[in-house]
Image (cartoon, rainbow, N blue to C red; front, side, top):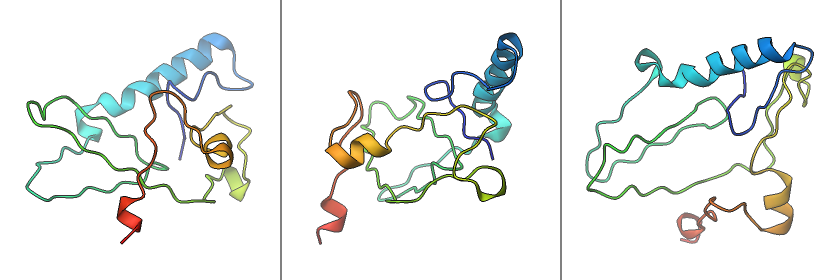
Length: 122
């Protein structure tokens, strides 16, 4: 499994810049290929859950004029593992959002919603 996105992965360590850019651009475009997508046919009261560790998600604006409502649930302490269960991969330089800073300070980057506790309060 490769954890890569334009927001978090800037280059591949140990690979020439041109080649790194080409590989990353190809990987960035894979989620746009219709054959690799799952489209939801929404029904009332339907809930969709996915694992961000192994799935990229994208919300096309085909739900308008309806509102899109999203709740985020994060598993505390779960880390992605690299080759042979090492906690850091030497293949790709990565910066994964939502790790130490949000957990320690309770702050979030601009544009990221604070996770709701409503589902766990009952």
